[in-house]
Length: 367
Image (cartoon, rainbow, N blue to C red; front, side):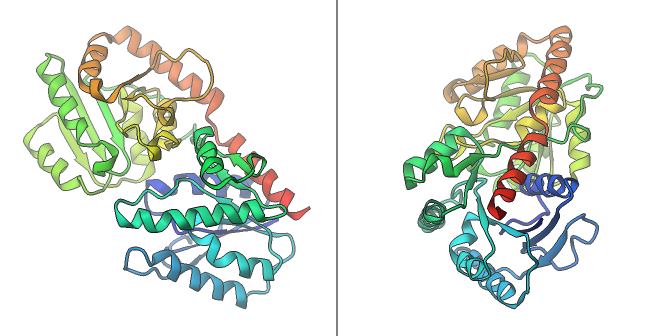
């Protein structure tokens, strides 16, 4: 099976981890994967997959359209092999699905997140998102992938797409890369990912300050880039218990997590975050970290297992409840809960099941 993956995501940040893991999983099952995205040609030379890079418009709102136009030309020029199937991001589907169907290439829709850009860009993107899911609903065979049950319900409610055409593909974790290590002596909290205001990031330095003022010794480590980075960097220069770093290689992030105690999920209870399946949540668990965050469906693991290593609170109680909870922790229960988190990850969070789900769906398109 030859898999063409058309995506607008770059592979040089945290957001590409899911795609990399799924692509590698498909390849490990004996199939060929060709990634087509905005990364520079040649930048994937060390990867297992084939890659074609396209230029991207610098104008927000026009990027997907320009990228799609280049992809359409590529499809038109290519004589594609038999047993070829495409994975297409929702931002691109409505622009290229016609060319795929002319070439008789079956496709599936990949939706890792509905429109998330702030302001007017989001308003422009929602109609595209709905039209893409409508293509799935009208197709005789195509299916679409969401990240959670809540995400699936949103698609069904907003677009009337048949439930049987929507499959859930949650984020997994690399259990070899992210693992339980010897923890630092000082209680260490970590957040890694986009450092954007709409993610609730600015609540984290205040949490650390209030914990310090309560008498506990603690460190806060923030890793990533975003519209809050400069502000957070300034706070890091003022307070020695706050460390802020730009994007790091995944291996380095894994090393930091393995030594840390608490992974933070500050994303608020909004439509976007309540349907998410944040990859960092699984990486925290695999690293033997306790999890502290805002209480909503996007931050909860599914199932009825007892998970005393997760503490989710209401947004208005985030600081006060966080302090109380951290004061209740000692070295004994920290170690016990760290092992419980790791065990849960080993039993529930590997990439094996998501990869199997995706491969089976792709095969079914070729039958």
